[in-house]
Image (cartoon, rainbow, N blue to C red; front, side):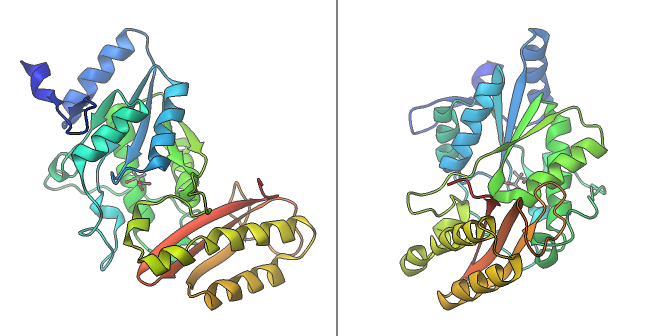
Length: 296
Ligand code: PAF
């Protein structure tokens, strides 16, 4: 009977076991671990797309069982951001995660995650201070707090996070190292539309005109990466990339080259870097990043 209660039928054919409490999650995880099987976790905020599905497929390659979570985390949205509007659709998300191969879905509600009197914040200094941290001041505290909780609730062997949120990935790696959370953090490659636009749950906010312009973000980054790799200095390269984006209708929040491991700002001529951008198209804030030397 209990098993029937936690199995929920999804309208798109695929079934996945859904647990909603930390206690049920731990019971399930403990059973697998007692059988000597290892576990990978893919935390998400739902609005599942092919990028999340590729993280689940990657996780499946790395472990015996894959657990995905869906929780739209209020702590990582600032005032006036899109917490209320963030796309939600559990049945569709569950079916897509099951299709990608997830074995279990953890969907806590707000009270399960942040019970009355919740008073703890995880803050990762340094890495969170520039880039997205500059324009979204409490964002990474919200991310670090919820990810610390998810990892401690589940205690997977591995957790996979997308490289599109590159600063987030490094913040999570640092937090896990600093707090000795016994989980290996693995990055998943960015998945792009055929025209180069990085997949994001927020792409659904773009109007059709904005959607046509959006791939320029990646084209411009790739061109800058090629120029830097061929010996041009960062400053003039990023300046002309910035001007090209603004001329195309973007409002650039930041466009910077950083050390790929420490995120220290770089200047002059470099042979290795990550170029990161955040830019608004209308009201939609898009982020993306590429490597120097470029991957293609
Ligand atoms: O990248 C995301 O979707 C979220 O920031 C995460 C890691 C699930 C934490 O809420």
